[in-house]
Length: 258
Image 1 (tube, rainbow, N blue to C red):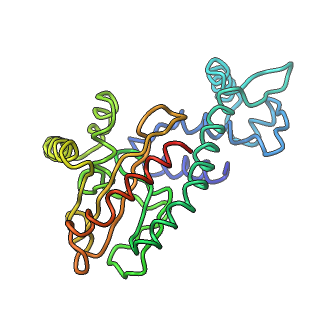
Image 2 (cartoon, rainbow, N blue to C red; image 1 turned 60 degrees about the vertical axis):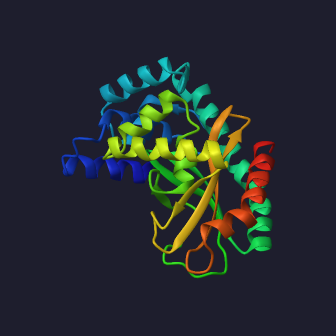
């Protein structure tokens, strides 16, 4: 991981990337210098591994220690408590998805639909799991796929269940926030009356999808969204809702208790 981070820093510098925060990237690369065996590193070793000047490493270490991402014992440095907190959160999410997968497969196979679980990252919905139906679609989404938050059912279900602060953060990352606000307001009213959000050919003209939010008991928030999608040519919104909305809502409730 350290090599890829250093390459990213070099690329950003060579291409004069104004949006790239080099100091932040260097701090992350410094933490990445520690290996899986959690062996302590000296100041000199951190300089050698990161390729950074001694003065830069000293400033980064000072900041990271103040933030409890690195701790010092004598002349050696260790990863700090906040690194392990982030690691714990990542592991919790991985285990959550792992426990969700069999339940998602069960629903997808029983109803012959695609079922996906996603969370928001940088103003887009990031797919954590996707169980695809046998039907062939133009857009085949899988783990790691990113889709727009505005034009998808899974994105709308997520956004309208966020706090005002979170919504404002997401809107700042969207290219046309004014149009997005109107779309989200419509989605909120629709959800209040129907219990789901829908995207009927808006993201992809051959896909109809409905979605519901998923409560994360660890984060104490609606951290995820769950959708069911089908080919528009085979199944319309009314049939999709009639056959699959209740099972989808029940699955969301089960996932919230995992």
